[in-house]
Image (cartoon, rainbow, N blue to C red; front, side, top):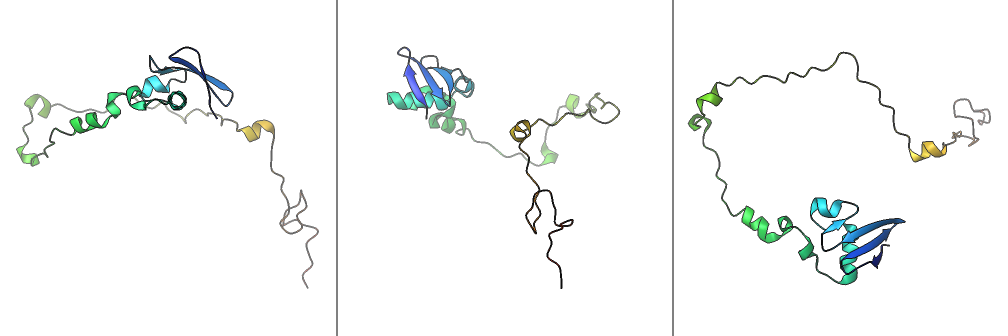
Length: 150
């Protein structure tokens, strides 16, 4: 649950799972960085807009509005003619395309250690138990409590 506390008319403090974020509706920014990067309200800005009962349209970039999308696709896109009919300038036609000059260094790539999971850090490891007698430390193959076959 996000807690929204107003600081000024445009600036709000949003607390989410113990972390605090500052949202400024006037500048369309949030301290998480998503609001200004994606130019669409992030989850913290949505919490502020919902609390103030504001419509999000004014806080979204024009790129996300349907009018802009319709204008983009208003221009017709024509398919290309047959390859034989293409007009290619000579300076491009005879350009030699070469592979990049970068060479991979010899040897195998350097070892990058696997990042430890929360389970590894806390030392939580599963205990192996025998599927026959369910005693910890045994396994089915070396089980001494296995029922005798008649």
